[in-house]
Length: 167
Image (cartoon, rainbow, N blue to C red):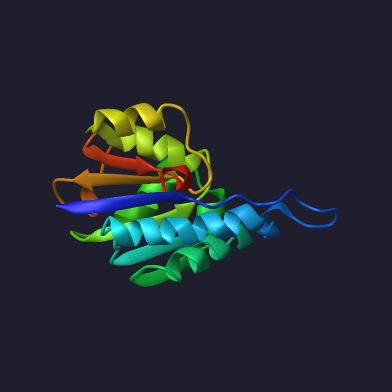
């Protein structure tokens, strides 16, 4: 069995003149939410063996907030998580996944699209929450019967979908 944790970066401020979207930092609520999600991950024992993180500033700051409150395992920083689509995310997960657990800190709509596509079944409440969208700092916990290297559409079970508002 393996687990995939899909975390959308925390809330970022609007880009200021001359600041690229890639370089947008988290706002104050985003910083607090990232820390809340780290504590929530620890409380639920959502501890990844490996973390894949986008190199966009808001994703890096989300990782910092999470890592201040829970173990994030080995961390790889990937530029491609900023620009890939959901299919690209799945390819990256397959290439880095094994029988353990993986946290991906990325962007929308990719995280939402991937969570929906992978979750063929799941907790009824979690699926209902996910159907309302994937807010910043949202976390989907998806379980697979085998290795993440074999993850495919509809083969996952959505165990939980949580947001900072839940804590």
